[in-house]
View (cartoon, helix red, strand yellow):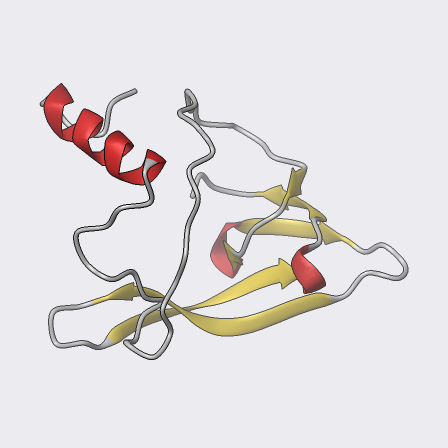
Amino acid sequence: MSIHKDDSLFNKLTDYLKNGKTYYTITLGLANLIANFRFNGIYEAKPLDEANEIITVVPEKNVGSIEITEGKKYFKEKLPVNRNLTRGFKVRRCSYGGAGKNIKRKISKQL
């Protein structure tokens, strides 16, 4: 899978990521939330029809059910998921596991 028809752009992006370089300062939405990253590799992605265990924030509309496990924390909140040209945010209700832990859930639609 390639992210662009021109492989040279993909190769340039890969080089930047491998060497910790950026074109713009990476932020988590706003200038006072400067982000960091590390390159973990290039992997082939394929769509899943069903997922049972996910370690990420998932829009609530995509969650079919959540399996509750004793001792784990679960959160649902409105999070910014997209930013528009006027610096506003598109917000969606999302669910995720506390402390970066995975939660078992059925995904009702592809993300």
